[in-house]
Length: 436
Image (cartoon, rainbow, N blue to C red; front, side, top):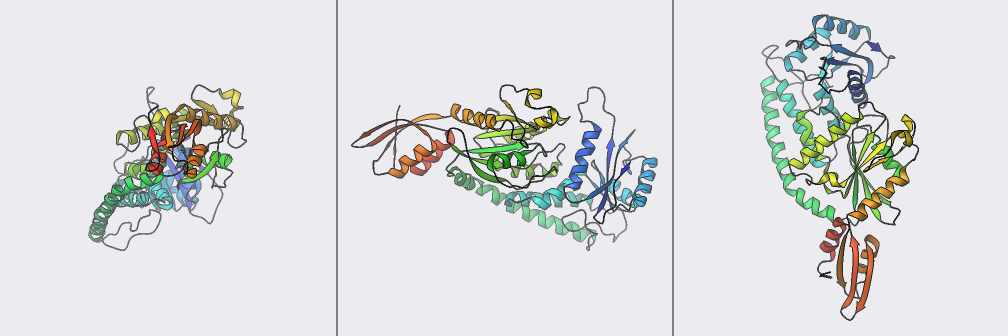
């Protein structure tokens, strides 16, 4: 086990129980998984003073870990004044209780840790409701009568706070009532989602959404392209609130760039719905930039994690089934592996370094080219008195022909599918769509 420097902040240990995979298992390396867990803990302000991989010969029903491992961990907890131990695995309520008794400190599992992070940073209405619902459903499974008749378990919606102040049955009843209310509120939010999407379609510019594994450099890239100062740190889940800014492409077109929450492996089942709720901008995006950290030893597995979530969204109808046709893979952090030439671009990929700016012109050109490829040609008759409508077409499309007549100006224009839909929704009552 490795220890860090003392701190007045909450001191934590991160423990990864690891079962040796067989040769056909493509599980990520234990070191990479442990590093990710440490990053998760650090992202909510915990000071990790101890981290370790503990090999499991078998999963113990009572404590998950072996007896000798528990004793060794107990000594470390006492020596380093650790107040919370994070087990990077799923713990049963009994395992959690027994470990807390044995170690003499609070114990949480991977699910509780990620729930705490999302609970702290969820911003959208649906995301907030989904996170609270996930918290409550997880907590309800922890309310087991395994201590004494009037023993108390955790209260509130976080897992790093103190014990609750209600008896188990009262807790369970209160949580059940709240779950029913939350599900009712979520149903209402889903019914109004269609109205929200209609409002987003009225946005005058196409949307380019950044997606990718957490800590892949999305926010750094967002800042580099927009000149914004969105919070960007070498930290998991540095941003959870989607952020949008306008940028101009080499052709002169303007698009809206959207930074979204980072993906993560083994997302707790309780949070899958909440996670997808934070990705609505992806559903409406004209182009999806899949940002990958090419310097990470597990980059391929991280790519698969992202694709798996997006395919799940396609299966449940959140995004269109042809979403992969809108994706540009952005291979980021090339500066850490010897430069862009050392990575090598393939069709559909762009190699960049967001931190140095190397390759950003190529990325903007690729976005421009992809938008041009997807454009549709339309012919509209616009009344000559409607200068604002004509100006909209010149600003958001490529006017390739114009003939003025007594009935109006016949304008041939190339538009992205999204801009064509926006134009016809906004000005359909004014213009006439003609056959080409």
